[in-house]
Each structure stands twice: as C-alpha cells, then as structure tokens.
Image 1 (cartoon, one colour):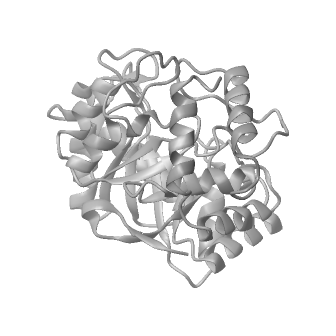
Image 2: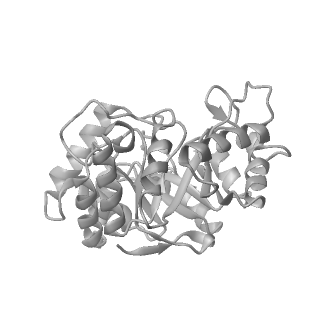
Length: 325
C-alpha cells in the first residue's frame, strides 16, 4: 500500500482508508468473524487509517472498531466525528466534549488522531445544518475541539465538506482545521473544479479542494463509489444519497454512461473508480466503505494499478462536460 502525505499534519497515511459508515456497513451489520476478518485483511494490505462516527449505526460502528482494534498488535490511525444540536440550550463546547467522551467510551480509547465536524455547514443554520458562526465564534465548535486537542485527547481537527460551498470554504479558510472529508468520484469530480461548470446540475463542490490545498489540509475522498453506483451494477437497497441535487436514477445513468465509454480496459468498475480518485495528487486517502472483505482486495488491486492514463482522465472530463450523454 502506497503512503501519502496527510497535509500539514505530516502524517504518512495509506492511500486507502477503512470506512465504518452505513453505506458499506460491515462494522454495523456483519457478524463478528466477518468484521474481524475485514479489519485483519485491511491491516495486512497496509491500511493504516480507520474512520468512524457516532451516527454510524447509532454507535455500533465505534463500538465494533473499539474491540476489533483492541485485538490486534497494530496501532492504526483512528478518526471519528461530532455533530451538534443547534436547538439545544447546552453550550457548543459542552456538546462537543460530551459527544466525544461517549465516542471514546465506545471506542475503548483515551484519544483519537482526528476529530471531524459531521454537521453540514450552510450560510444559515436550519435542521441538520450549522453556520460558520457555530464553528468559528468564541465558544463555538472549533473552540471545543481545540480544547480537546490541548488536553491531548485529539491531535488534529477536521470537517466534512458536504454543505454549502461558500460557507464550507469560509470554515476551511479560517486555518483552524487540518483535514476535510470531500465528496469526489468519477461522476461528480466537482470538488476539484476551480469554479462551477456551465450546465452542471448535480451537487457542486467547486473550490473546496483548492481551498484545502491553500491551507495545506489533508484531503480524505469520500463516496468514491457514489453509494455503490460506480462499484457495481447490482442494487442492494442500501444505496443512500447524501448530496443535494442528486438522485438515484441520475447516479445510475451517469455511472452506466461512464463504463459504457471506458469498458473494462482499466480494471473492474470498482478498480477504475479507485484509480480515478487516486489519480488526483491532492487526495491524501480514499475512504472505502465495504460490505464484504473481498471488496478490500478489489480496491487494493485498483490502487496497485496506479493512476488512470491522462487520456482516460480527459475522456472522463469530456463526458462530464457533456452531462454524461
């Protein structure tokens, strides 16, 4: 497994990371032996980063990761997340501390390497979204996270960059965060664009990777299989859409258009998707969600094939420009 620099943290992390989320679900739904085998296989392949969150299976993912990593000799990097309730009378700092304390208990650890904001950031807070002010003001989330860092309970601060571009970039530009999880895949590479493209109708993440580069932040690519639409043509009912201006029918159509154009000359669907993401040198790691251990091997083989050829990347860019028609 190749290692990549994780931004200004200067950590060297595996170019594939183990995702503990609902989309793959192996830490949440699989039996203990399957989960144990998946973690063992990931470590044997050279994966040195495991990502989870309290919301993944209502804590089941963190709990599983806690006992699974306690069984192994290796000490990989671990990241989790925090989400706040803007309607609560509890202070933001207290919410961060309380959520993280519960995460540590489930993980059976006294610290993690990276704590990330899981709430989506928007200009105005409503429902599940928070505003930059909730993050950056005195007594805000960043203050709470920095307090945990100063206490040695976390090493680095991160965020999930899935909200409104302008608001998310405002938080990135604060310079207070070391890493971001960024939506990036073959059918939506918009986070790598400098500006929105004319005619683009899907989720628009333009400018986010540029902002991270300017701050020398680590970039963790998420949803690299687009809720599995890129990885396989078989539907399981587990597919979930996270982003605005996105629907299942369009994702499936666009994914099918990509592989109708590329064929299988560059590996399986999943391998091609991995190769695309890792072709971007701004990406520190690609987080892989999996439901079966075999998917780890497939992703690893894709990574080992190296970046997609430049002419293929150009072909994909043209296909994207044409709306996958």
